[in-house]
Length: 223
Image 1: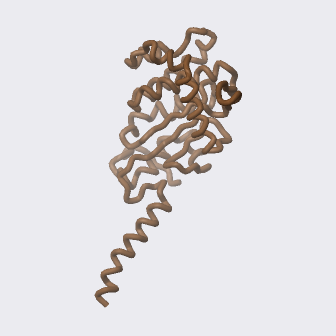
Image 2: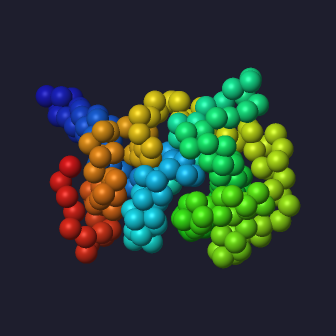
Image 3: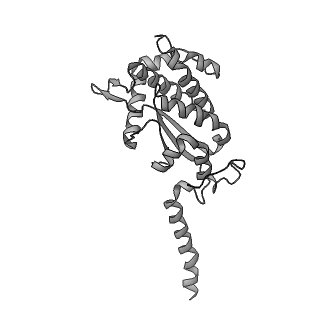
């Protein structure tokens, strides 16, 4: 009898773990940051809207609870054995995607990444006809040292490799819409649809068990 009683806590722990894994997007019993991946394009109007009105606007409130990865590729595709790319909104979008990949790869600070991408997405649409535009002003604005390193990345094989990696990650998601937002490695159409207009509320709902102190002043929706 005592042997059976000893097994009860173990069985309960296993059951709790399984429940946690099944409901992983709610982070029940976990203190890990919420993984958020944003798949977007440099000249996509919907990407700009999400970056500007959802991600950037709410970032400071959720930054400490989120492990963010920004992936600028979208519905682009490589060809000629991965040496060239075609992009949904033309060659200038390919340039923007590639430049952002270079800056993001060399800027691990998430706050700076969000600041840069928001600035770049807003300004690139207007300055894209300038062949010398590589987001220099956006880099300077947030204190990134925009030296030849970033431009060299863009002009060399390194920039190609970064875009090929972005393509591999994007293919894995099988995205149908840009931007696509993925939480904790699992795509959910419901979360995707809600995120486009209520990104902060989605994040707050997903982290409320792990970080009860977060979003206290937010009207959290029930997903």
